[in-house]
Length: 303
Image (cartoon, rainbow, N blue to C red; front, side, top):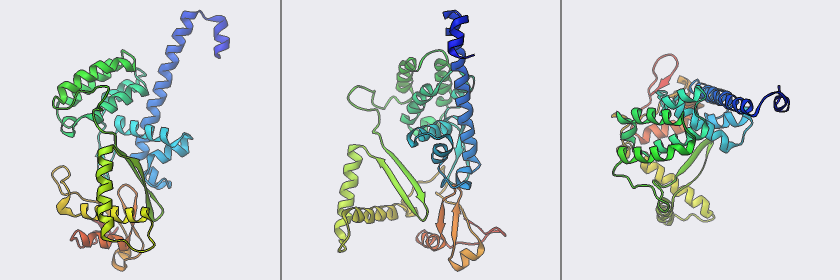
């Protein structure tokens, strides 16, 4: 029965009840879609089917939505249902209670985005501490009983409790500068895009200028000189002595490749997130890090 047919047999109150019921159905379907996106991501489907490890690109193609919306869907899926880390370890969701409320049809995408944005503004030690699960459960309960705007005050109050040293939000100063970068592999190279806040942009511009002055090869465009300088920044930062530890352990990247590729320096290696690295580059990276690649087992797994 469509809306026109309903209007002839149902009262206005009954139509409102039907609207409420349909909203629940839609939200449950949305939650199921996000759970499916997270599951496909954890199974490595974005790599297996040629999406270069990007769940957003997978959603863009399969669901036929714009890339911006596909990214929002992928980010919600990760926050609600978890994901897979670069080394292949499972990462738990940040919003498990919100996910349950979503699956029941009690909250919608805007509720999720507000809670997810709040979580992104908190220090990392807060999210891994004992207070965050309690706060997230509280917000999920409130969200199931009110509209997205009803979360504003509880979020402000929780922010003051969980991060008392942080700046209180106001109309003039954002809680945290907005910075986003998307790094995606395309065949044998990488594409980077995004935006930086004013302070970070000025600092990066200054560093690129300084590094660019040290070497000015003839015929190079300004964009090419910037890229050379940025590559030098990455090379400096990639030094193991300069990197922070990851969960108390040195930062590691696990790759797999055949024994022949390792010994002969041909072919490619595959990281746990599906990215590929030419064998010659892998040897150079390992050399820079002071590591001698070794073959482990018949599958040629290299750590």
